[in-house]
Image (tube, rainbow over all chains, first blue to last red):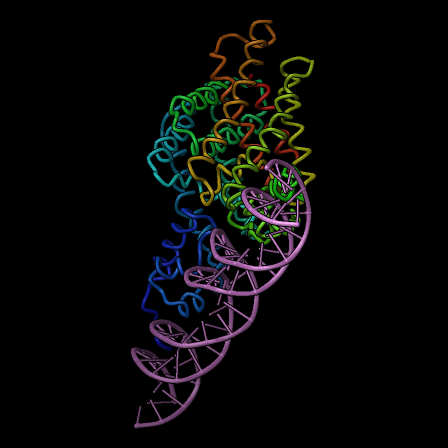
Length: 192
Length: 192
DNA sequence: TTAATTTTGTACAGATCAGTAAAGAATGGA
DNA sequence: TCCATTCTTTACTGATCTGTACAAAATTAA
């Protein structure tokens, strides 16, 4: 009962996610959020509580959409090396095509001191470990089929690869040198 | 001629650097900068022009001090593997000991959309390529002495290692899991 | 001593900040 | 119809934001 909402919560969170992704937490004003979502201040605060709570919600949405899409990409058919290479090549294309150089919202949230409460850090950590586990499973498959050398602990291999992946995304924020990024990819794939 | 400054430019820039490092560009107010440097608004604007110009100056100072210290660490005696491992182990200790989880100012400046003008991106890029070149030289030494395998392009190896290094610093911002970070180190060093 | 120059401190501008209060509008149920 | 409930809109709070204006203070050169 009561007056029904005139907006879709999902669409509003999507809009907020895009905005936090573009500008970061601190630089995004509640006025920006109202304009972008189309909500009035009252509606926004009534629905989401505060700027920071909406930030958390946006990060959760990011994990459920963009993060999951990344994990799904790793589940596609193909050799382990190809799948891990495609993961990196995909972000090179995506990141370099984006004029705003938004990068990855989870990485941005990890970097920015400003909105990084323990709640936010926890959400980011979860995305990090989800990717780590997905990569780990691939490395284990590769080692068991003989595609990859089995002389190193799979978790170590996975974690080093994941770290290179995150470094790649940060590098892509300031460099226009595609070859440098491709070198990271080939270097990281060769190291598997 | 004219009235002499009552403060040291260097000390003021150092203080501003610390503040931008802790809080990021957007979240640092000019009032914060005045308090931390001890300057009045007039003096601060007279000496540094604007918040953003001071930010650039602070990033330059970071490169000249912290960045150079990192490069110097790579020039110490020891095997190539040991020196590259020590670089990573050093930041694990430093980053985890820092309660504010400031990480690396250059990486933060790369990540934060807010203050990232082309001037800032250029300063960050320079620090990135300086480190890349230092790592490259080490890889070349390692390959020529036979310490490292010579079957891969040194630049590719160096860039992949550098990327893992940056990823490590981002991971250190949100994780308290030292073993995960040590796995990155051993994985990246084993990949050389 | 006077003039030119620079720094300092303070007050201020105008805008924007996150969040709230309250009145009116739209619904479902009694 | 009338009430309880929820949402929308608007106005507002008090604080804070970056940057500037300007007069007083401190210096050097003439």
